[in-house]
Image (cartoon, one colour):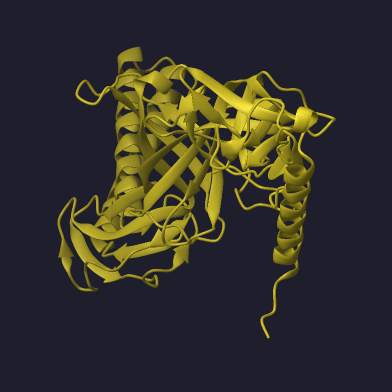
Amino acid sequence: MILVPSFSRVRLRVAFAVIALAAVGCARGGPGGGFSMPPMPVETAVASKETVFDRFEAVGSIEAGDAITVATEIAANVVSLPYREGRPVEKGALLAQLDDAQPKAEVDRTSAIRDQARSTYERVKSVVEQGAGSAQDLDDAGAALKVAEANLALADTRLSKAQIKAPFDGVVGSKRVSPGAYLKVGDAITDLARISELKVIFSAPERYLGKLKAGAPVSVSTTAYPGYALSGRIDVIDPVLDPETRSARVTARVRNPGGKFRPGMSANASVVLSERMNALTIPNEAVFAEGNQTLVYVVQADSTVSRRAVTLGTRLSDEVEVVQGLEPGQRVVVAGHQKLFETAKVIPIQSQGGGGAGGAGGGAPGGAAAGGANAGKGAAPGKSPAAKPGEKSGK
């Protein structure tokens, strides 16, 4: 026994009904004894209003929000490296302790000189106030005190550089030196990167710069984590374009709370260029072209069809925006319109996709995608593109 799915049984019943109607029509004949075409089953969908986002898509690279190579500013031996490689550290955490015996001695020496200069200044000031000294003597003593204080501050600064601390929260890299090693000024110790916030670098062709604005929402995904995306905003659009590619370097910043994305990964950036509320959309399959005209078949109340010229806007992956020619709620033929003609009688069958499908695809207004421009609908800007139940989202 062959089991036929319920949907297939419905289609078979429709086909049998069509055959029966055709047989009756052939037997009885139409008006005046001519042949009368039976109604044809067609899939239909309803033109509905959606929120449509025009998007620009580009491939870029991920960089750390902040990244540095930790190096020494003084020449000294390494005493200890009190951090664990590859682990997060907080701002101010000690990364390296260098030998500070010499800087400490310098602090003690300059501190003693400062104290002596202060005592001399106080003594000379007292003598001058009694009228037994000159103002020049007081000026000389004051200048000597200031020099001594500056030398002490310089010695304190050198001593502080023996302790190398993290300037910001981040993840520390592997150790490039070991305790006991002698470091010269500028020698690298390790790397530190902030990955809780990332920069995404990509290029935008000049034709999109009119719509591309700082602060525009950006959705970022990568092939390493399919179905997972981060949301952020454009931070910088470089003012000077690359003269060879005629494109501008764009930097977006995104939060990376899970720490999944890492610097160096490739990134798919989707930027919202504009948003249109209550845009009228129909399935792509409903549209066909004849010459320079874009047409659809509209199902009338008496189950006949009428050809209707439409003006299209943004094309999505499985839908298209209709700018002119249709009204919300009108039913259009999605499948089976190849054999239709004006005033043809049809048997409407609701499309499996309902009133139309969501999603995103490439497109510029009135045509196919060009240069990475895309559109989506249903999801709010800046949100993750994962769709909620019953809602489809643009890329």
